Amino acid sequence: MQSAKQTAADAAAVAKEHVDILRAKAQEKAEKAAAPTKEGREIAHERRKVKEAEAKMKMHAAKADHAADKLHAAQHGGLCGIGCNHPHHGGRYQEPYVGSASPPTVAPAYPPGGYPPGWIPPK
Image (tube, rainbow, N blue to C red; front, side):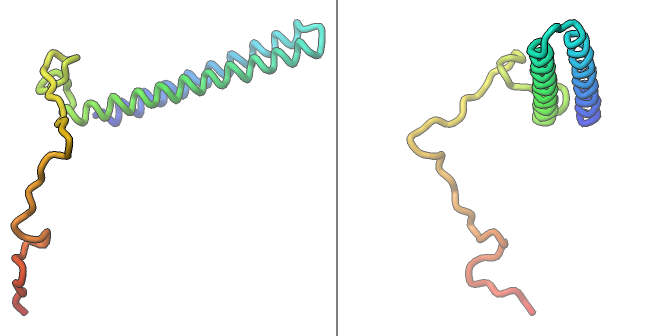
């Protein structure tokens, strides 16, 4: 469900970017028509490029927000607030281990294959 929401939100962000770019092109055209000098037309062109870059930046920022929302929902079972432990959702947050060294680890009794040392599987 969250993937569908992210896809729809990303599509909306891209559509908004296209609208902003078309608006910038229309404004450039109007400014070029009103500009009496070549420098004025160049300024209008540079303004359009700035507006297009801003639209792309907003689109990428929106996509990053949507991906973060999807990740947050995946980590918290889809419905944040139910079982969510973050302080911004009214829960208590457990601080990570802060020590001089990493937390102690326990070596497994057997190697990762699951057989004790020296054991030979039957043929």
